[in-house]
Image (cartoon, rainbow, N blue to C red; front, side):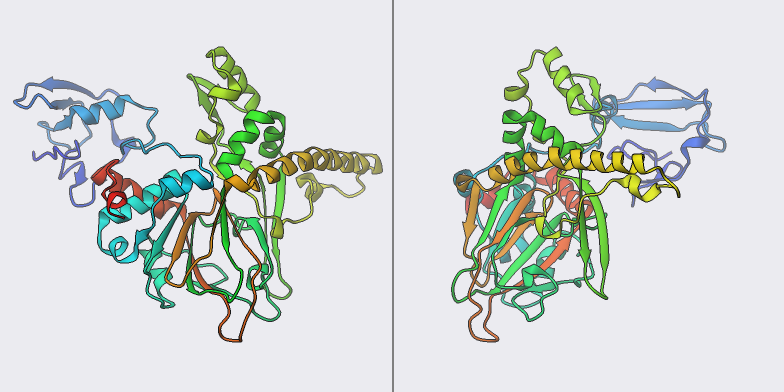
Length: 422
C-alpha cells in the first residue's frame, strides 16, 4: 500500500495525492476502529496499522504521519494546519510611513516574494501602495487577479471614480468624501479594495486613510462602555437608488465572534471577557488587546439608513398601542446610547496624527482592507472636461485573499526580501 509522507494520509484508498481530497466518508469509519504503532526507520514519521478498518479497505492498511502532523492534530485550538500568521499592527501616520514601503508593480506581478510582502502588509496594516502601474483601464483588475478572482457587483467588474453629472454615488462627485467603508449595505461586503490612479485632479483630491483598529483599541481602553455600545447595537445601511437597486443590511460598528476565548474561558460578551481577564490577573485596559477579536469594523455614514428595531417587522395585527409606544421607547434608548459612543469613535478616527494622507499620482494603485482601513478623499477641482480626476477600482473577497496569503506564508514565512529591496 503506497502512502504519502507529505500529507500524512494514505493514497489510493484514502485520498488522491493530486488534490489531497478524501475518498471515504467519516461516517464510514467503524466506532471500534483501533491502531497500533509499527516500528519504522525514520524517527520523524509514525506508522499506524489499523484494525477494524473501513469495510473493503485492505488488511495491511498503514498510515504514515509526520511528528509535526501529529502536533498539529493535538493542537485542536488551531483552526488550520498553516503556520500562525503575524499579529496585526496598529498604526498612525508616522508609524505607517516607517513600516510600509511602496512596492513596484512589475515586481509585484512577477515575483511571488513581492506579492507575499504586499499580502503581509495587507494582513498586518491593511494598506499598501504599488507604483509604476501601467496607465491602462485593465491594470486594476490585473493587480487584483494576481491575488484571486475579482468580486463583481452592480457597479461592475471594475468601476470608475470620477465626477459625473447626476451622480448615483457621492463618490462620483468632486466634493469632500469623509471616512467610510464600501458596500456595507450588502450581506458580504468586499474585503479588499483596489484604486488605481489613472489621472490626478488639477487641484485637491488627496486620498486619506486611517486605522479603525487603532481607534477601536483606544476606545476600548479609554471608554469601554462606549465600545460595548458600538459592539452591541446594530446600525442599518442601505443603497436606495430610484428605479435601480435597493440593498439593506444591519450590522454593529464592531463585529466580534461568539464565543470569545481568554485563558481557556468561554466568553459570550464583553462583560464575560473583562471578568476572564481579571481572573487571569490582567489589567483589562492595558493588557487586553481587543483588536485580536475584531472580525470586522463597519462605518459608512453616507449610506447609513434610519434606525429601526427588527421586531417592527413581526408586529401582529391589532398590536396594543402601549406596546408600540414601548417599542419606540426602546428604539430611542438604542439611539441615545449609540450616538455618544459613535461620536467618541468619530473623534478617534479623525485624530490628525492618525491620518495618512497622500496625493495619488498617475501610475499609483492603493490596496487596502475595506473592513479595517477607513478611506476618504479631499474635495477637488473638476478642471477641463475629459481631464478630471480618474481612479479605477475593483474589489476582492476575503477567502481568496486569505488563501493566497497562507499559501505564500507557508512558502516564505516571515521573510520580507521585497521590503529590503523596495
